[in-house]
Image (cartoon, rainbow, N blue to C red; front, side, top):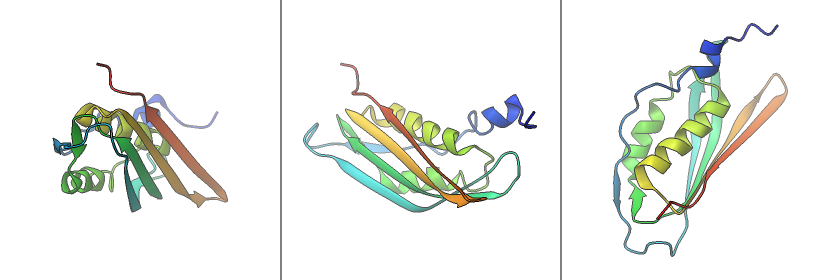
Length: 130
């Protein structure tokens, strides 16, 4: 028994985040965008200790691109949120996919080692349905 509960596992998934604004892509499906967030932080829902990561977002826009200031405000909302690393990456991917409907999207979180274990989580969303 690990002491982890269903509440720990779902922590942060129903949180309301600032909206992700978008703007119209002028060159749909002709380029790839890579965004690196080197100082991402969140909180472990079990221990309350901080988690640090480099988040990498890569996407091919269809009709919309994410506006970077809104992305920064969205990601800052994780700073004091109890949420597992796996949930961070999947939630960011789901929210970006919902906001932009990109052709392709991958979110990768490279989390700083804790207790000698380093975790990398990657979530992808397929091409937008037409």
